[in-house]
Length: 330
Image 1 (cartoon, rainbow, N blue to C red):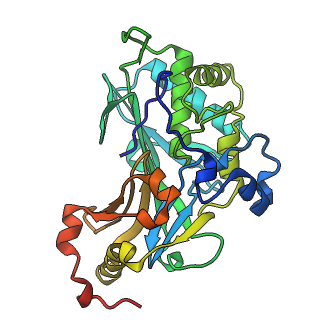
Image 2 (image 1 turned 30 degrees about the vertical axis):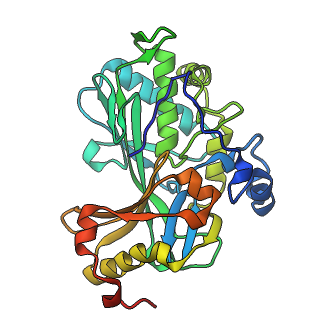
């Protein structure tokens, strides 16, 4: 679902200023004094996780708990150079001010799983340089909370990193340098740690600029720390921090409302939230790991105008959802 085109300097960015969103940098800085020590923070450029429920959209952050190490595993097939780049990236993050630590574990025990593949990384929109998915678990008891935060925490993330390399100005593909590979891994790990979307201006490994990735990768390979204002701002606030709420017609969220009632009745795990560059997803899992999800498209449009939100059930979900008249809502 999450599409990544790292190290692609010719990419066109979404022409959207933060002022069009329901939260801006100055407003967030005033609400959250924890952001004041983070010089150049860009939290307003985050694409937050979305929870549509009972006639309201809630936009919130989600990250890992830093009290425990985050387990990271690498699938078989990674080369020594790829292992070295990943270790350099993880080390730079551990030396940063985020407070994150990592435990190297087998992939089946990992919260972040990294896989290197030949060619490009497959994604919902086709083939990309890399593809990262990070799922946030939300505590059911906090869904209707009116507080400043939901009980939410990242549950799992996966990074698929393609060996295709990058294209030059003539469209020819070349292999990544060690610096580029390490910087691109830092970018993907930033997404896996909860920063969704891309920084549009300023120096950040969470931007799209190839030179910024090179600099970050070079510093990591030299044993430096990642001093990134975007990630620092995310980790300065508690996971689940609500950035904005927007009322919408109850009809706009009623499919999620009904599915949550089904999940409670059937003891499904979740809910979980996922956010990509264009689409958000909320879903639940049964005991066999089968997922029942609903999607919201045109995220930037919904951020500008919440009342236009459209929630669409996936085919499996459509089959299990009862008719609205059969599920009384509170």
